[in-house]
Length: 401
Image 1 (cartoon, one colour):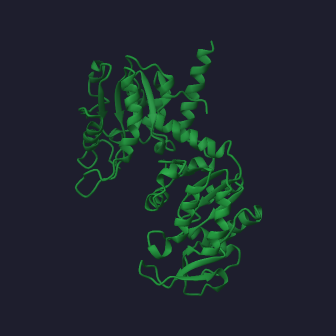
Image 2: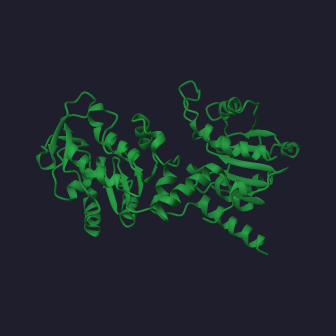
């Protein structure tokens, strides 16, 4: 990918605007319950400061109403936590778009946080006038928020077009390098594991991946819909009968690429204390709920994972939150962690499973992207990445004379 990286840019004496992803979860009292995203964003901030930049950082938080800043929407707790992690004060600036000349006084080594960018009218609509105003605040624009790259918003898209210099921060760069390694020039065999409740939310992804991978493993409610398409019994299990034809067309178009469960773990009700029963797929009864894959299915998948060159994982295989139905997802997580393949995993439930089974440090790369991760896997163009590539090409053409 042809884009400038923050490390490529001389930021000495420059005002650096960093669009970060600081949309952290909070408890009922508004306190930060997980500061992972703040910690992940520190590398870019520290780099720009260490090389003599004056840094302004912003992010969205929650779903504010444009033009109305409430206590629930303020980045004040984030600024406070960032300051604690960096060992310095971080001033929060509220009216930063039309708030006077505050930015002109920034000096090398200064760091400020700009209030929730989605409060600014026109942010979500990617309004050009707003982006132009914001671009005038800085010398260098840096996007370090991969999770927002699938959205064309003023601070993720249009601002990159109008800033004097536009580049990608280290977190965004790492995401794109990992995704490129997994999909653009993967070591073979390439194995994709896609779980979750609904085929409808991942149908485009499944079709796209089926054409790229050597093996496509499906799990959860998605697998149930594929089992129906293959003429198997699934009882009362979660599925989407209206998409059986679509699932069947994928099976027909890519014969042998989509291994389906041969045995499953069933229960009569969806509950943590429900009695679990392992059954061959043809023995599933009319009142059964399939909540996990069985040991024979696991045994068939583990060698595929062990011998893979690249593994892409999105979504659990079963209801891993219930101990009785966690074995399938646990086994696959451990197999991925043990495989010599390069592995990349993304999606909220996937990350929760990785943490639950203690394999975080043995996954090659864990994506923070969510929706952006899925859209990249589908092969869609992400607007915030496209504009950085455009600006990168322009910069290199100018440098070449």
